[in-house]
Length: 216
Length: 212
Image (cartoon, rainbow over all chains, first blue to last red; front, side, top):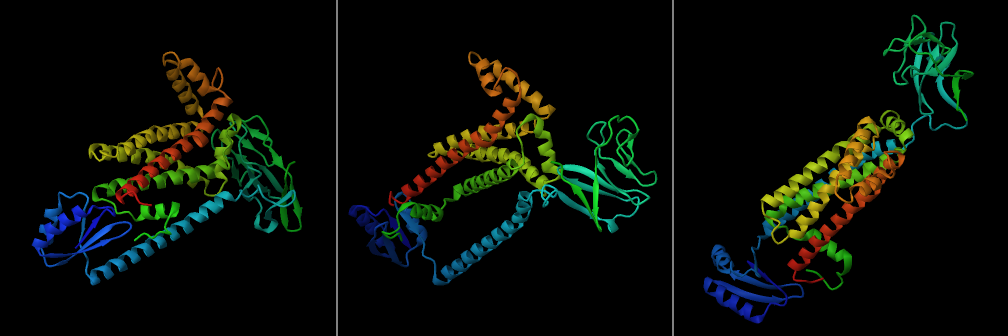
């Protein structure tokens, strides 16, 4: 057992302690340090009796000595826990880095070199096909009609400026699922309740690649 | 154990981190660490969200839609920020209530007082955060809130004007809400948490007999 005291503990206190514990079968080894005064107790007294005897001394900490084996086991356990915590922390940090990096990266369409932004290749667009685009902060639809020409329109119905239009392949119309409005590929209103034409954007073709032009 | 070269902030930090924790305080310390971690998470996601959020009435809705729809992982950041704000209130309440009913504030009253100051700030942060959506619900909540403030005797009308930033709810109300949410309240919370940390350091040093 070890008794830990204040570094400035008075000699009377130490003497009192010695007189208390020596009859219980402990031998005292006093060591005065800078941070604490330590009294090492050796012998085969009863630890419970010791604790009870010193309970009224609030300024004395009674610390049991662990065996060498126990100490090793505690050290290994502590090292394992530290490693486990560090590993888990690293995993969480790595997992968190992906969304954070993605979040910091400005969305596509905000980027793009020059004024032309590549949106598709001609071969990936079947006739009567549509492709949703997100460009310049807008939702758009890239469309190809039955004669093979390309169009780009806004994907938001002009009636409430909320609903996303759906491409009807059979009728080559953009239809609004909310209130049934419809537009053709040129943005003209074909059926109400919308009354304002749909904004359209010129598609530029260079060889196989299709581009939209950034508006200034 | 501690040598003469062990001085300054580093030594204090090392001592504090290695200080033995009494058994009855383990739960409290765990809750406190959880609170700080949640608050750090809020600061982090909040800073990220502020990259895209625009506190101007005509731009709010679009910028929030942009975060949710266009920015990758934007839904995650906003969702985290939203739900952790609620979790913060719950954890703060439980933390304070545990200390109160366990009577563990005895001899550590200032810990509890500082915590009790943090709680209304956390609630205020959640409240102003909801308003930053600046939709219909936020608008009417602000009006309700302001008419409540106006009923405070003597200073009510002036206080309402300060919060509103004008004679009616307008763009400057939103801008004041934003400043309170993003700049003012978080710094107050950090300062209170720093004071709390100072208390912990003080207690550790006392336990070591005033050394270092």
